[in-house]
Length: 224
Image (cartoon, rainbow, N blue to C red; front, side, top):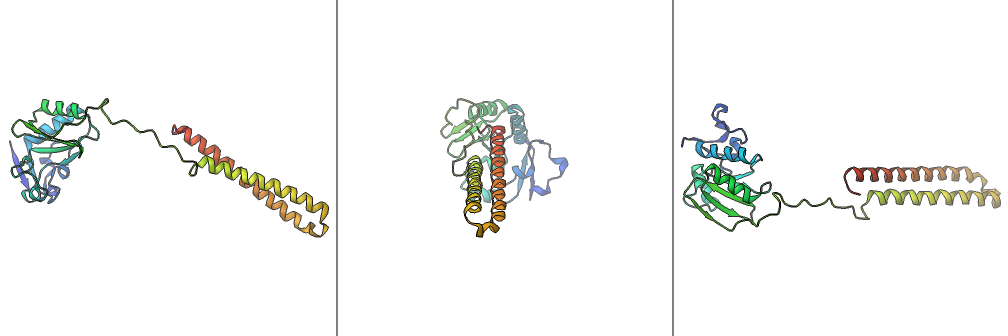
């Protein structure tokens, strides 16, 4: 296998990088930025990506010896040879992933269901860890969108505002009639009360508009 070392992944010439679905940054050491390009291992990683047809989220690839020691890696870890990859299973069915990885030539497998990733490498044929529970589907069950609580509901807020404002407008109108009939001394206030009634009406219309918008928006999002 051809191997090329770079003191930092930014030093890699564009012409030296030929794996279209991965970048030198995500393959480099997470602790130091150093990069050992193991062409054979990267070819198999790209082949695995092509076979699965979905992105591979690389949690760890090459590790410099000092970083490998800092994270408690095995003393002879294949990560230090650029021949091992830890791949997140968030967007993969672990069973299908393992089968595809074996098919393209990976031999070493480490299963970490609690941490959500599978380790693959080009070392001797071996495996460790407890396999992931078998899923009914290739992906985790999609949770339905959370419904709005009544206290936070835009529909309830809009409807409540409309109701309060409508009652307020009606109350002002009754007050106008009573004052006009019984209190001639307060007649100058009637025009102001009329203006207040229109304010309540405007608020009521605004609340109705908010309610209609919320209903339409929820319908569009499937949140009926």
